[in-house]
Length: 250
Ligand SMILES: [Zn+2]
Image 1: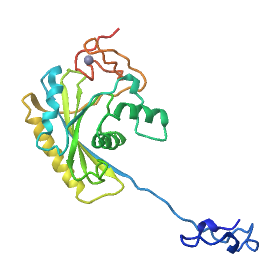
Image 2 (image 1 turned 30 degrees about the vertical axis):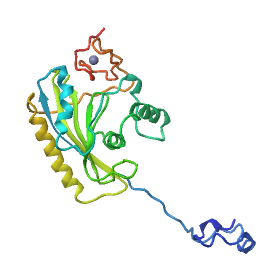
Image 3 (image 1 turned 180 degrees about the vertical axis):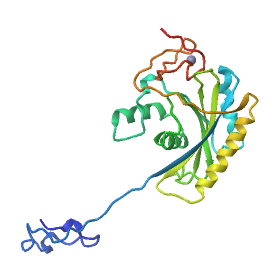
Image 4 (image 1 turned 30 degrees about the horizontal axis):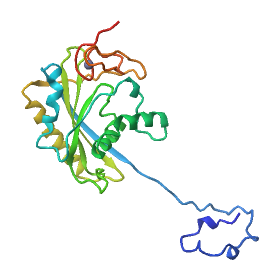
């Protein structure tokens, strides 16, 4: 078979009869001429230490205020996912997981969806137990409203400490896409520090704490909160990921 398809653009307009067919047909060339294709995606993010909050379940209402002064777009709240979305993953080659993810997140803004793709891909947030409050923090968006590769997105992720029932907040930033820029990491560090300052400045903050992230067991869980009706996908949850009230077992 003639290797017509390897010809450069501009040559392809030649009529097929012009190609040298009979002489080379069926012969393996001595060297394969390969055209290489690749896409390098770069996702990165940072999270801070945790800050323990003494507030009780009304703490959730405090979260958006921690982005004030830093948010460059609308501040959006992403709640923990209930059990029917426990397999949700932003991976298009896995249609069942991808459909769950889209069903869970299509309501959010392009900025928040971009943030979730980046931060879930690098495991910086886990919506089995995290509540994530998100905004554009630095950089530009494209004409469709999606952040550029060097734009920084993020905010505050919060979960309920399984031992004490306190809310633990941490600053989270992320960026990425088809490109890398040298100063993004430095700006990310600066924004992380500013977010942590905002969290610590909250009236209910009682100081830094080591984060022990709950380990969710995928596909298990199913405890239903008697207070808000939320069905947790998170097997170890003692506290409702959504409203923070104690879950009743049995
Ligand atoms: Zn609840």
